[in-house]
Image (cartoon, rainbow, N blue to C red; front, side, top):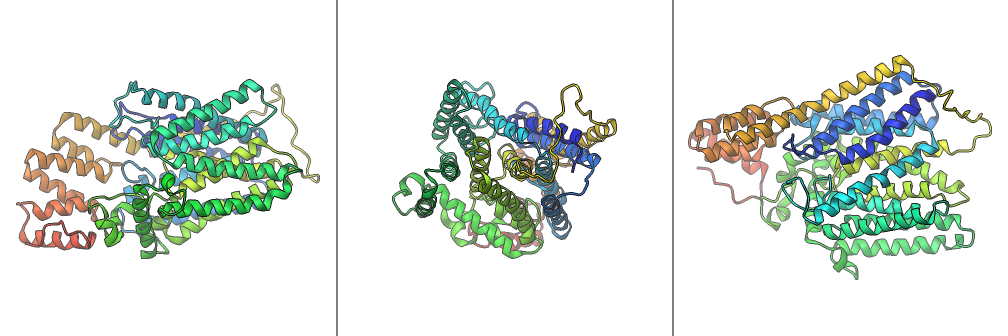
Amino acid sequence: MIELSVRRRIGTLLLFLGPITTFAVSPFYNFDPINLVKLLFVTSFAFAFLALLISGGFHRPFRSERLLLTASAGFVIWMLVALFASDAPINQQIWGVFGRSTGILTYTSLVIVLIATALVFDVRFYRKLVDALVLTSVPMTGYALVQIAGRDPISWSQMAPFATLGNINFSSAFFGLAALCAVTLGVDRENSLLLRGALFLLAVVQMLIVLETGSIQGFMIFIAGLGVGVFVWIRTAPKLRNLQLPYLALGVVGTGFVVAALFNMGPLARFVFQDTILFRFDYWYAGWMMTLRNPILGLGMDSYGDWYRELRGEVATLRTGPDRITNTAHNIYLDISASGGFPLLIFYMVIIGLALGAAIRVIRRQTEFNPYFTAMFSAWVAYLIQAGVSINQVGVGIWGWLFTGALIGYEKASRQEPSKKPEKPVSRQSHVQLPASAALLGIFGFGFGFTLAFIPLNADAKFRTSLQSGVARDQFVAAQALGSAAYHMELSLDSAIKAGDETLTGEITDELLKRYPRDFMAWRVRQVLTTSTPERRKEASQRLRELDPFNTTTVPVP
């Protein structure tokens, strides 16, 4: 059991972490204004939590805690195994590719956040966590409305209601989760009529924003989560318990219709099916093929984009043209298995299984409808569904990982254990102070995590400054900084080509291939560069065929 003072301090910080991660953007400092700054907060707080947990110590951990710690340690260790076993660039595996930032540092931080959340063991904290999501959605809703009105004070690269998440699919998913929690809390009769009305109004506005985005993710997970919530309510209503099996049967039928609609079949097809679903099938197929390519060790964290062209298949190559590419499977489970093989996916699924088992135990012993637990559980299920069709965007994903830990912790915190003495309430006057040693260790952990995440943030900021200069050489220098990504160097290569500087183009191409041997753009440039020797051109042509075997648009071997 972690010391009470440490658990309470962690709980307070966790309530701050979710909102700040969702809100954080840096449009005036970074070239990637969304992901890197969110990673900075998650990593800084995660390592502070780790330090506090270490300082708090474990005293006879419960079986559920041991399983969680074992699965979490296995997940992190296997990422490290994949790091050294893979040929993928180390910096890319640690910090992730540009625009995603889902490398080892991100997943390690999320695992720590999950463990910290699970070990708080305070029902009031878990209730506040649900409140935090709903409250976070209020300014997010306001900002999205400003964007819809065309009054956004920030000149983003695209003008759409994505709030602070960078993409309409992510904002759609976030508002779907928030609206689900708002509706669930809105049925709580302990709340005033005014508050309940405000919650329902908030949910309606958020669903209208989802409609404006044109993304079905928000509607899909809202409906699915609402279905889960209704089932929990039926179980606790004495007059409705006999409807459990018919309701489940109805749910199975509804799920079947939705699955059929994904394949453009059935009555729901015109509401669900979109051309982008076909693209996702292509991405999922490629992710599965990557998993099978190296089922034990994977291909390296966040290395999906390096292998997509080679393993996407002929149909995906020709469907809309060979230049429709991606660096993620748009499916978190496949991203994980492609990165670290089946063992990494198994560790992740064990963690998910622990949360599901905890939720089922709570549902079985509930005799009354609990809006907060229902909101937490239904939003978690909705997140898992969204994870099957989308990306682990940190601003949205942080809530999924928080709720995963919350379900595990809530089960124990709400358990009736006659054999154990209840924890004595602590008054404000006798509040247990955090030991100085623990506070110092927490500050050190925060600084350590901040340093790790600041490296790519700073490199990206320097590259943004170099772009403003318009000098290709400056961009090339900035793109070589520790923490930079392949995309930074590709942009500097593009600038050199447009400037007509073949000498610099050759230098950048050589450096790009040295750091990222599977970079398709670099091999294509080397193939057509006039300063390339015939041998180099021939090698480039051969590599292009290997990297993209069904692409017929590449220049043939000279």
